[in-house]
Image (cartoon, rainbow, N blue to C red; front, side, top):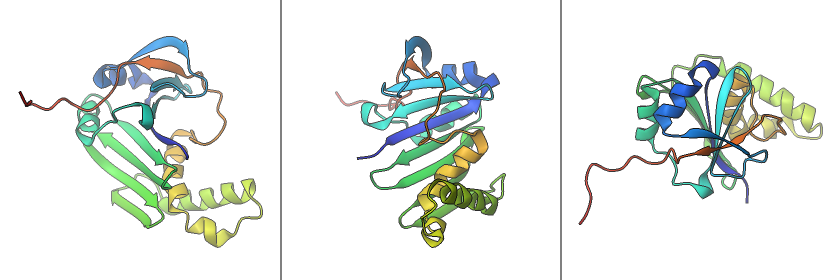
Length: 184
């Protein structure tokens, strides 16, 4: 069984606004292996929140839209069990573009602020460097890798690489919004 995570990235200068809008806060508890429910770290340019889907309630589209009214950010959703990846950008209360890939194909929505073919070329070259025996045709059809590479290209953070960012546990849930109704 593989990862089932979401990584959120906002500009470093937007970190405090993002944390407040998401209803989470930093702690001093180290989480070097991203094993807690939520953990956060900065690379100096971006602030990342790592969410372990299997430990949390998840975050729904309305939550992302609400948070993006305060600050723009990107989300990378990864489910290695089914090899599905989605990179989405949120701003001004809506998803402005997305790239998703799985075994069925690649889906693109919105106006991308980058050249997807350039990301594809760089992804293929990275894979061929890391796996010299790989078949180029197989890599070219790896929609999962391309969708996750979009996030890495824009933030510099590859979810599956060994990183040395100082992740610490976060307090709060950044969970689903409560409905405006309830059953008695």
